[in-house]
Amino acid sequence: MDKEKHDITFPTKDGVFNMRVGAIILRDDKVLMVRNNRDSYYYSVGGRVKLQETLEEAIIRECFEETKVHFEVDRLVYIHENFFPVQSGTYGETQFHEIAFFYLMKSNEVEVECESYTSDGIEERLEWLPISNLQDAFLFPEFFKSELACLPAEIKHIVTVEEKRT
Image (cartoon, rainbow, N blue to C red; front, side, top):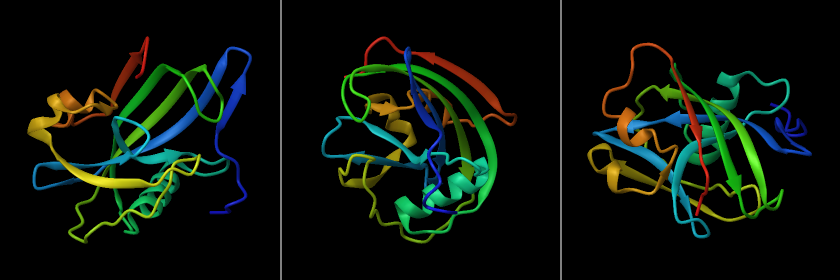
């Protein structure tokens, strides 16, 4: 993938539109999540889709960028329409309209290591979270707390409207 391609993220007068892919990487009843030193929450491995990039190309690229492991796609599991406010960052205080596609990745026993950074340069780290304890975790997407225990057989569409993110 050409590194010069632009992310499918653009500001409008009413907020920012963002197109994202997320990975569901499972092992030993745990899910691999990402965290950084700035934010108090976990988030899925993944990131923004680039212009002229397929969703599958994007999730494979993002998984490799964040874990240094070549994962293969198993299947698309969730389509998530997410509406949420952002208080800071590249676009300042604004409203986001995000469409995210969450892919189950094929099992891979290789050890993962994190050498990635947020879009504004904050170092990230990977953590395996027990699926049985997700109710106690501060994470996004929040539907992982209830959905990962029993993945749907068909693609599931989820809509989230968030008033405030801390």
